[in-house]
Length: 473
Image 1 (cartoon, rainbow, N blue to C red):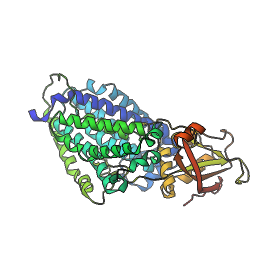
Image 2 (image 1 turned 90 degrees about the vertical axis):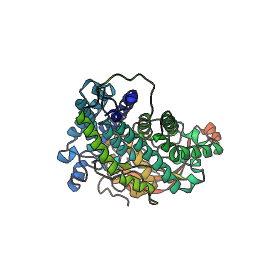
Image 3 (image 1 turned 120 degrees about the vertical axis):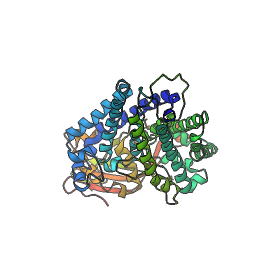
Image 4 (image 1 turned 135 degrees about the vertical axis):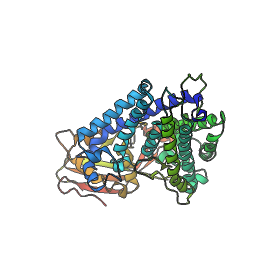
């Protein structure tokens, strides 16, 4: 069938696949380096405890069949190896069916991780990587031109990502409609980057322009993805520029990068396509069957988008084949941070020698400038932002974090920038306090060298010792 493939997009497919493999690699690397403290056998939310109460059909995963920390490590590092192979073009050296199976491997492995990852893997970019990764299985390799229907479905995902995000903003916080959200967002976002302080101090009229441009990019431009070239390429390029602006302004894990990867699938790169044989019949049947399945499953995300009670970042099936997306439907006006401290004193007093634990990415000491970590995902740091919004967000894991700090647990301390206690001398007590953070002004920065100013608000967790660790409700 001549209409089945689009030979002009062979370079588009190549760029898309290599970029997607890079995002997969970051995802697996994040899992391999952090899992023991988060979901390992002695983690804050252990996988064995999760699979005891959640059946396979609700959370399909290899770890439903068997779990041990060494087995998880093998799966995560295997995912890194396969992703690196795909990044290097290994799939192009295999027959069509072999390349498809190779792309299926990281999808199965990452699905297995996400479905047992619990709170630590509840972010929208996890489902987005799985939805995009599933479609990549059917995009083919050098033996066949890219299937038109798969290219269309990739644009359909991009449309839902952008348009859904735009709708959730217009229906949510009024500051999006008043064009004032960026007066606060750069200061209160989950994890600021090294340039976020400067973005916050841009002139307010420019913030209004930023918000208005965001509305155009998310509510108007997505429709242009389904127009003929070169308009579709121009629309995708505008989305890429917008995402790069977000990359500069904060640390949003790989959300911006996977969105850029999706946009690349709509860009038609000028090239001379190679001569390839027509697609085999079995491949056409498989691709069309999968496309029909995904179109049918898209009913739920479409229904959610047009609903007045639109929700963000939800999967509608346990395989994460179709999902709904969106971010920052509401924007915080004030930034709070949970500061965790420990003391070696036998009796904890206010004047005791309380030493602060330093996290890698979340704001801590006022003079410490934020660093760039994205696309790498610091899961604990992100959840600490949610914990500061409400203790309810930390109810399932914060007590376990305190317990691990009291034990000087090696794997937990690896998630931090620095522990104030030597490995052989853990603290006797740990406490947590809530502070209000704000960016300093230009004058304050020059005078103090501090990018943050913080003010004590209240106690978050009273001094707690290892025996009888109590979780604050």
